[in-house]
Image (cartoon, rainbow, N blue to C red; front, side, top):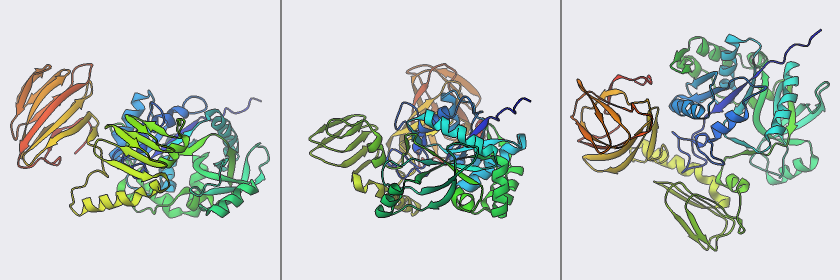
Length: 482
C-alpha cells in the first residue's frame, strides 16, 4: 500500500515591528525586515527565499496595513508570489496573528500545515534548519505543536529558554517540553547552559492549522471566536486580504508561548544548531558582522583611525571616527546615533520620547519615517522646506503613477530629470521628457505617470499656505487608498 504524500508546508511569515530597536536605520513605517542589514536582500526577502522550494508551498505574510505595499514590492522584487498577504487590523501579538493565518488557510485546505516564522531572523545554516523542519513535520503529523529550540552558544540573558523533556517515540531528535523559562539573569543563564538541556526560544513554530485552532479553542475560546469572525467578515482588497477590524480588535493580545505552548500537553521541541540570530540590536549586528583587525564592523562610507571593537554604519553621510573603543555610531540622512555598545539597547525609550513629543505637537518625525517616503508607485524625498515652499524628489516606477488628485492649498511645478512622464492636468494629457516641465495650478485635477521602462525622476516644487501630505483629494487610485 502506497504511503500518503507529505503535505506541503505553508510558510507564514510574521512581518510586524515598530522600528525602534535598530533606530535610526529602522523606522516605524520602514522597520528592519525591509532593510538590507546583512546581505544584498532585505530580511523579509531572505526569509521568504529560505522558505521556498520543497517542502514549502507559496508563503503567506501577515503584516499591518501601513506596510502592505512594502511587503508586496519586496516579494515581487524577489520573484516570490505569495499565497496571501493578510493585513492584521491591529497589533495583538503572535497567538491571534497565527490564528488569523490558520483560519484563512483552513478555508481552502482543512489539513494545511504551517510554519510560523518571524521575518527578521538570520539563519546561517539553512540546511540544518531544513533538517529540523523535516523532523518537526513528522511530529506535526502526529498531532504535535512543534517549536524549535536554538542550541545556545553562550549564556545569553536576552532570550527566553525551553527545557526539553523526554524523547518522542517515532521522531528522532524531537522531545517533549518540560517548561518555558523567561529571560534569565546571568547566573541562571549560566546554570541553564551547564545543564545542557535548555535551548533558546527562537519563536518559530510548525503545526497543522487545525491542531493549533483546536488547542487554542480549548484554551482561549474567546480568541478563536474573535479571529474566526474577523476572517469570515473579512474581504479581499487588491492583492491583500483584510480581516474585519472590529471583530479582531475585540481579541486580547497574547503570545503563542503564553496562550498555547505553556498550557498545551501536545507541545514538542526540535533542538537545532542553525546559526540563528535575532537581529534585535546594533550589538547583535556587531556580533555577527565581518570584523577588521581591530574588531570593527563598518558599513557604508566610514573612515576611522585608532578605533577598536566598534560598529560604524552610514546610510548616507561620511562617518569619521578617531580614538574610540566599543562604540556604535549609526548615521542616516536625518539622524545620528552615538552610544557605547553595552548601552545601545536602551534606544527604545529614546525613540518613545521622540514619539511622545510628536504626539504633543512637537514636530518630530524621525521615529516614524526616513526623509525618503515609500509609496506603492515609488518614493518621494523632501530636499528643502520653508514657510510657503517645499522641494521634493519623486521617483515613479515603470508602469506606475500617483492617484488622480487635487490640492486645495498648494500649487506644484514638476520638472523631469530622468525618464518620461505622462501628465494629466484637468482635461489635458501631455508627455514630458528630460528637462521639460509643467505647472499644476491650485485645485487642478492632476496625475503623474511613468509610461516608460525606466524609473521616472521628477523634481517637484510646491508653493502655498499649507504643504501637509493630508491636503489631498483623490478621485481615482488604483492602489485602493482613500
